[in-house]
Image 1: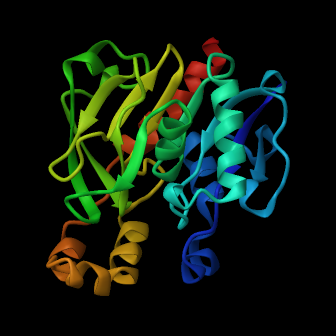
Image 2 (image 1 turned 45 degrees about the horizontal axis):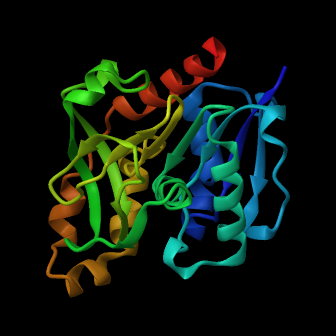
Length: 237
């Protein structure tokens, strides 16, 4: 059986790694797959990516890097993603969402509204009502967010699927089976709260109240449900 490829674009906060594991651990737990059913490739450390035809699907993780830094590993991963679109289903999360959008011709930059953090309401567009991944979650969900940069403009021909109060492009689809999600379906309230604490001084510099944002952090089952829907799509492909 072909495995799900997890493209690891970096590590989370060291304290979280020690206590809760890393991005790939949360994603695997969310999908409901066993670790043996997945393969993790750490592109930040230069590990090579497999041929798209050798895997069942792709999930691209978040990162503390910025797409606009154009690091060599990131640019190489963007090229790989552009070549893989249309073959296995792809799901980009946060940095992965931005990197996928950039690879396909979109624009990434600092979010003009500042950092978006905490648990927020995601509002789906009418197009999401018939989207294979997100149809069961319209019109709104609560989801975890933590990002400074955004996919400011979507790739040409991409379908806009969701937004939030501080983020115009929370989700998109490209073609039939490539999706980007700015929000974090693999996060829970505990992880999100740790990120709010980690970025508290940056939030204050932007005039935001980290204490108030921390209080918004609540668990939501929607993220896990979306990840499991993506796995169902792989089995149906």
